[in-house]
Image 1 (tube, rainbow, N blue to C red):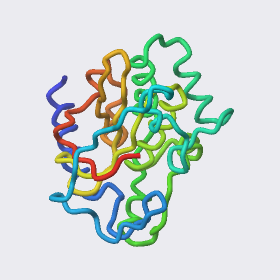
Image 2: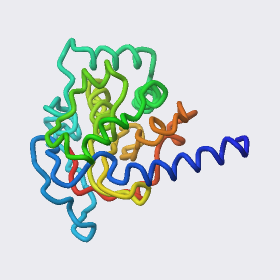
Image 3: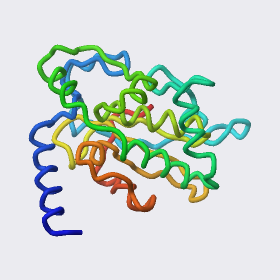
Image 4: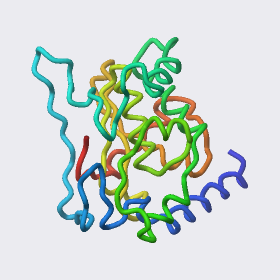
Length: 220
């Protein structure tokens, strides 16, 4: 990478961490219908260990469902876009990367929304995945909800995780995605490419981030 480009990305990351310490998750905001009066302490944080589904259900069936915050109604825009992105992909890894790269290359961080949350003008919020897809902007919660919804619509188990990361100075949201071919969960964080404008990852291994830097207090 060009040294000047690398320096610009480092500076942008520092600006991100200072400007958005809570990544639009302020104390008191209603997250997915549950008001968080105070962000959970780091000492109380726990690792997420997904439970496997009974043999009669798909593996990790809980993370294949459409929910209020991870919505992908049949025939809706979210499911249709995911199907379009994944139509020529042969593996779950290829599909997950296609979805990741679509969001990373086409979505931007909504600084106006983040400012409104910090200022207390927005206190109740649940992501609307169809609107996020249409508007192509959001914050960590939005990117994570949309990625999980698109993956789930393709039969790929995905979690929307909330908690803490050493990469962001406050409460944050990101994803974990299960790849059957590896029988493993991987951590992905779309906030950084969307905010920094770094675009697509050349491979899934480049998209995945170090899970040891993330501690979830909840996962859906």
